[in-house]
Length: 557
Image (cartoon, rainbow, N blue to C red; front, side, top):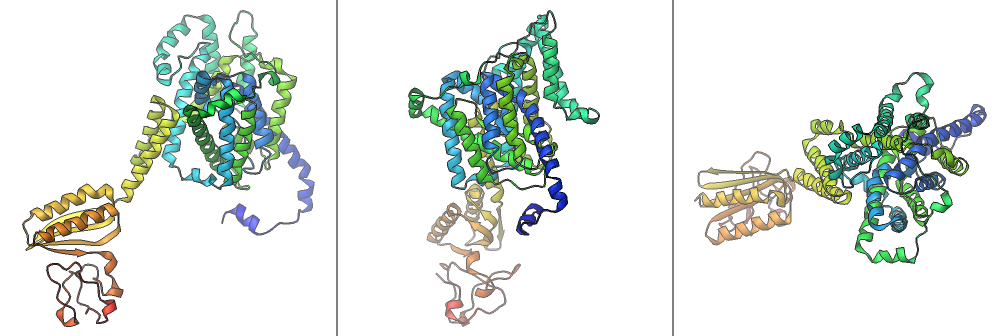
């Protein structure tokens, strides 16, 4: 039982005077934490929207919903939700192919499906996904995100597909070097990335200021200088940016592509949120996440976001870790951060129009690098090379094709790896005198069937008059292997050979079974049972006498 669970099990305790006196300080801490989260979330909300190919206002709306709706619902105490960089590439592709209005329908039904999954208590199902697949998925999201944002970081337009973005980087570098304004924009992006890596090493309380906010401030100052003409945000009214899906968009539900997109968004958003919840739980000692309740909360947020035509919502590690590090203890801080986002967008929209796009792109390149996490690959190689192969395969397939295909391939590879490891069967074949022996131990499944067939064929080809199949060490025998053995026994007996089959379920001390290391022999004739002949299937035993009780005697055929 964890410490948190133990505290709950002990029952409620009365608040001490010092606790009651500290309630004001606790409220101040929650408000301070909410402001810190707001400062982290603001550039990320805008940057994700720009990377997704939608107006910046939609990112802010999703951030507000993530705070005021998801943040207020019981599930995870300190996890903060909003538009996520991990879905930016998928959203951009969807918007380019189907439009922003259809995006609202997809997000809406993804939210409804998330709530259904939470209500039927499937929230913990996502914890059963292999960690290698999860890390491969995140890397497969992060790598294309970085290359897609290198272009707006230089005030250029990305070609589109991940592989095209990667192959076009040398040309982008040449074009940027020839354009002074593009060099300024790229310089701001590089400064933003460097700050993202180094700002945490800043001395004293300075490092508590979010690095992204510092980068935004620097970018706004440089963009205001005479002679600097870098691209900045175009910000309008929140209300005007809302696109409520209509009958035409809902009619698209008959399209198989829309249904596929809904399932893809649901799986990825749910997995990312619940994986983040597990990571955030490791950052603090407070109440643990209620996974089904959190999935319902995420679904409620996405349902409202879809009705407003906004971006999909997931839990976000950057905001959540900032919330924990700021000392938050309750849901109040994450809820208030949504209120600050709303107030800023309504009262100071003109400030947003001063932010260079290249700075926001730099923020997302840094986020993409953290998602890619290259240090995890050698770490996984050292820990488990099979899982490393699954992780790498997932990443490569996502980059080469699409997110859903990569995740499905990764899950399939993970299942195959697990099945192979569960099928640790040892199959040995050797000849002693007039007997060809095949010994099988471990988990005999269809994955080991080729090895088993090979051993059986060698035994049949040995030319010995007797074949002994020793399966006493088998812990699991699946249908495919059992069928193969039965067919082999029937064929060899039909050819006149004596086949002895030793199975674990008919032996043991209770049945007078063989002891480890002993040689099974035919039951003695003195026990009122006939001596096993050439067609007998069960052969035992060691020096122990066979029990005289008929019901205790091993079955003879």
